[in-house]
Amino acid sequence: MDTATRIEQALTAAVARAEAPPAPPKLAAAVRHAVFSGGARVRPQLCLAVAKACGDDTPAMSDAAAAAIEMLHCASLVHDDLPCFDDADIRRGKPTVHAVYGEPLGVLVGDALIVMAFEALALAGAAEPQRLPALTVTIARAVGTPAGLVAGQAWESEPNPELIAYQRAKTGALFVAASVAGAVAAGSDPGPWRGLGERLGDAYQIADDLRDAVCTPEELGKPAGQDEALGRPNAVAEFGIDGALARLQQLLGEAVDSIPDCPGAPDLQQLVLLQAKRLTPKRLAPASVA
Amino acid sequence: MDTATRIEQALTAAVARAEAPPAPPKLAAAVRHAVFSGGARVRPQLCLAVAKACGDDTPAMSDAAAAAIEMLHCASLVHDDLPCFDDADIRRGKPTVHAVYGEPLGVLVGDALIVMAFEALALAGAAEPQRLPALTVTIARAVGTPAGLVAGQAWESEPNPELIAYQRAKTGALFVAASVAGAVAAGSDPGPWRGLGERLGDAYQIADDLRDAVCTPEELGKPAGQDEALGRPNAVAEFGIDGALARLQQLLGEAVDSIPDCPGAPDLQQLVLLQAKRLTPKRLAPASVA
Image 1 (cartoon, rainbow over the protein chains, first blue to last red):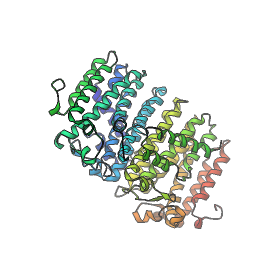
Image 2: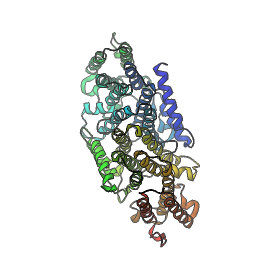
Image 3: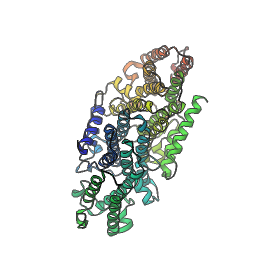
Image 4: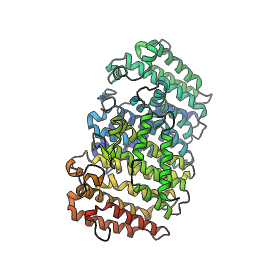
């Protein structure tokens, strides 16, 4: 089965558990809306690619890790879109959860998805319980505080956030967790895989900042120019467009170089290059990436 | 070590992890505010009392279960207090998290506490990994959807919530999880303990409804009369004050009767009677409870 199908099946199973009776109907519909709204599934694909490179001897466990990471990513998007943060009505070209279902369900869907992520890990963990503690801690640290997604978002409430700490927490941490969790779910040493996640996370954040600065709302499927409008720390403000683009290219090259020599290496290199093409705004793409 | 000290130590350790560098300072302070604001720790005490009755052979695991349950309870209070739900500025006689730190940090503290709960379970789970899947799933189901705290809160967004489903999810589920998790953390069959959690959860919800209806804001440490003001389904509206009080007494009696015959039974009976006294509004207390 290809990785995209495995990811969708694992997410479908988790959402089906969440919307089973006696689930409140609006909450069930809102959870489904949050998970199946056209996400690119970049992080779970990274997780499964690393798991495959490590032998992937317990696919139920790597599938759960991939789905958990994607649900946590979706949770962070739903909460980031709330009126008290970005107040975004559109995401991926579709109305956001709170725009359709109201602010209370926006809060509750994020909460539900966080819980669903850890439930999915635990359900799969029965197959290899001795891997579950490290797998859960890896993912929890990437999304919580002091250095995960929640901490990253909280830096926006501080008077003088430091760009690197902010971006590592808000974006990088979950990429690192995706690569590390892929190895841990497969029973392998995660050490050699951390660098790949770090480079991809940094690259993804810079690409996101570039796209926010130079793309139209139609290209983004959401409002553009938000970093500048909201005064958020970002790579374009710090390095300029050319400087940020150069840094993006450098990081993607380092990501490819960081992949350990293993049977799955070609697939992983392919994944990184595909992401590089997808992430770089078309009007900025150099010939080697476009 | 007594159970109250064990609970505070486990919570202190979890909060210390969350506020370690590079935690954003406001988030760290807001997490501490949410966890240490005078909560009665009813659920973690139930969890540890059941664990002790079951032998409590791995205290690190039962302590983590108790702390996780309390952090999830705190998370639900912080989110319930948000402007889009109860819009409460006062809780336990102190300003709520969002009243002090703003709405963004109110959302993020709830998210952080949910993650911290599952991280605490996983860290302790390394001691007895084969217990971790069931322990985590028990607690996740009690707080998520379709039938946990999040589902309970989401029933308030439905046009015709059913009182029993709503209250079981919003309050009962975490009491059931507290008793079941105490047994699972100690490696025991949780079956005989489910009934105790169910009765205490139902009793607690009715007591909460009674207190909201008959106590003053000073007695409650938060605004009174909120169920009626917000049109929330509640036991006083359904059964009247006398009917609700009779049901509360009956449930507390059933809770005491449900305790299995074991060395820890007297301590547990004591805990239930103490809660009965604490929960019943003074002006309604019959001689046998006051």
